[in-house]
Structure formats: C-alpha cells, structure tokens
Length: 528
Picture 1 (cartoon, helix red, strand yellow):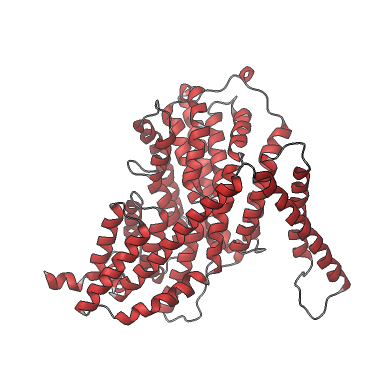
Picture 2 (tube, helix red, strand yellow):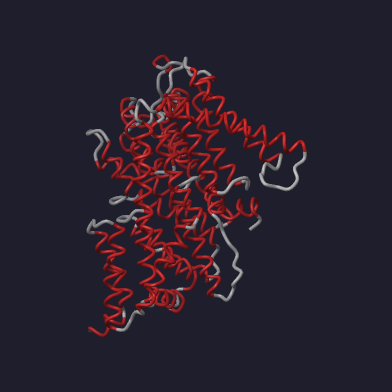
C-alpha cells in the first residue's frame, strides 16, 4: 500500500490540492504549500529531484515577470472596475428599458443586451451579475416579470463576461493555452513552434459569444409569446418616450470604447496589453465625463482629451511616428510634432477626468480594487507555477499523457473526459484556479493529439461559463442570491437558469460539431 502511494505521488498531490481547495483555504497558499510538502516527500522517497526547485526562480522571472501580455490583466481589471463605478449600467438599463419596454419581454431583452455590453466592457462575471441584480431585478419584478425569467436572464447574461472579449478569463486562458501549444509542439520535435495569441482567442470567442446573446434573446421572446404573463409589456403611458438622441448618448461612449479596445486587437493595430491600456485610459475619461457637472470646463477638456487620443491613434496608422530614426521626411517631422500636441491634450484630458473623480474617491476605490484583484491573480499564478513544476517533477505530466493517449478513449473521448472534469471543478473552483492548474496539465496532451488550440480554448471557456451557471453550485447563482430581494427564492433562481444552461450546452455542441464557428474569424483576420 505504501509503495503504491509513493509510486503515485503525482496523483495523490493533485487530489490533496483539490481537497484543500474545497475546504476553502486560500488558493495560492494551497497550491504552493501542497507542492512543497510533496516535493519534500518526493525527495525523501527518491521520487523527486531537488535540483528542479532551483528552476523555480527562473520560471517566475521568465514565465511571469517578463510576460508582457500579463500586464493586460491589471489594465483590464482597472477598466472594468472604473466602468462599474461610472454609472454606465444604470444609464444603459434605463435607456434600453424605455426603448424595448413596450414590447412583450422587452425588459428581458434589455437585460440580455446590457449584460452583453457590460460583459464586453468589464469582463468580470461577478461584477456584472451583482450590478444587474441590484439594478434590473427589482424593476423586472415590479413590472410583473416572473421571478424565474428575471433571475435566469440576469444570471445568464452576467456570465457572458466569461466568453465575450475582452475578458479577463480569455486573457489568462489565452496565455496558458499559448504556453501549452508551445510545449506540445516541442514534445513533437518542432523547435520553431507556431504561436497563438490572446487576440486569436478573442477572435475565436467572438462569434460563439454573440450566438449566445442571440439565443438568450430568442428564449426571452419565446417565453413572452407562450406565457405573456411572465414577461408583460410596459404600458406606454407609464414611461417617458426615449428619443434617438438619448439612445445615442447612452450607447455611443461604451460602444466606442468596446470597439476601440477589441477592434485595435483584432485589426492588429495593438497587442492585448496596448489595447488594455487604451481601455483603462478610455474608461477613466468616460467615468470622469459621466461624474462631472454638465456645465464644467473640466468636461470640455475631457472631451478634447478623448478626441486627441482618437486622433493620435488614427495618425499612428497613417504616418510612422517612431522616434530616433536617422531620417524623417518633413511630413513625418510635422506629424511627430502634431502627435506631441495631441499627447499633451490627452494628458490634460486624463488629468481633468481624475480631478473630477477625486472628490468622490472613485480613483481611490478603483485603484484599491484593481490592486486586490491583480494581486490575487498573480499570487495564484506563482503558486500554480510551483505546483506545476513539482507535479511534472513527480512525473504527473507523463501519467496524464499516458492515461489520455493509451486508455483507448481516442481524441474525442479524451476531450469529453477533460471537459467533464473542468465542468465539475467549475462548481467549486474559480476560473483562475482551473486555468492555472488544470489547463497546463491537460492542454499539451490534447494539443499533441492534433486538437486546434483556438477551438480548444473557446470550448473550455464556454464549458466553464456553463459550469458557473449550473445549479446547485454555479458561482453566478451565488452572486445573484446575495443581492436578490427576499421574494426571489433560491428555487426561482435555479429554475430560471435551467433553460439558459440548455442554451449553453447547445452552443457548446454546435461549436464541437462545427469548429469553424470558433476558428473561422481568427483564420480570416490573422490567416492562422
């Protein structure tokens, strides 16, 4: 018995880590502590080479500190938290509610559309569900919506932040999948491996994400038709009519920011990190504008600053603005001088936005929240790096590879097994832990079987999104339960999300049967 345990220290370590995580102990310390304990056991029993621990500092430096794409994480977090504080959700819900409210199911349609916009703006599932739950759920109940449909549509649309880019989950998953793809190719003897980027995964997830939005709306419309009492229309006389100008005012700024961030990545103008910086800056300008007084010189300066940054981005695509070159034409010299002026205007606009936000302490709150979330992500990443190092040192990667390739499951069976494992773990672990612990272990093995990395990444993202929505342990359900009124019971929430879980499974099946849904857009944009 003892010999069997010693020979299977890798599997025992993974099982112990999962059990400790389920007990609620902090993730980063669980991963690092479990790894160190089993490294010590392995050294004593001769199953682990202690020299491997010497590689840990270099893996931290090379795998985390020098990875520029990881800088996108705190920037996207800052963007999301800043938009959360800028009252953008309230204005969107109010405007869209008045626009669609006269239709059966109109409020439900508005919730799905606003949830999609918030998902693309913030990329943070918990923040979107809580915000929508606080703002939309009481209104929907007051207007006569059934608690099941109201709760289900809010919980489901809130999880769209998992799959609609730019998403924190996709940034982390894209980075891990890129490493797994490189590892798989090196294992096959390809020492000049192809690469995938976060932009590839963003492009791959865009169509499945939009498909989910369309099917969510179709379900709300279907319920409104067959059960009108569950999704009644709002009487026109009770609501102020929404003008075209109000719609444009509410939608223009968030849509412009989304298109600027996502468009710059997909078009190749900027990397994910550059686009995240653009998003953080744009969110600051937008929040400053929203929270400033209408008659205020600062508001005008913010507008000029935003216009200057847009002009600077456009100018950089027309003229080479790089400094330090030996020769510059007169046009390039003039463009560089103009770029300096635009930069100065952008800085002044940003300073004006911060000035408007400072009295309300929005900047303080956003900075603190960004630091908390970013620190959590990177500490978990460090712990996961040590866990992965020890797991491989104990032969865990060979054990997983042997099981998946030689068990007779085949490629399809191996994928189904991995998806089932990730789905089950999604009940208890956040996407960060699953991304950093499970994907580096199973990813290279599946990719060596010839699985497309972009398709696999999109499937994993949809799978985790479905898990977060599935009763009884879905994270999204807990977020909504925490802010739901007393008249909305847990049973209402569970019954409400079941049809949306079915839609998630349907989309996952469609992407599995027709991989082009995930791979077509990256191929068109990047030619991969």
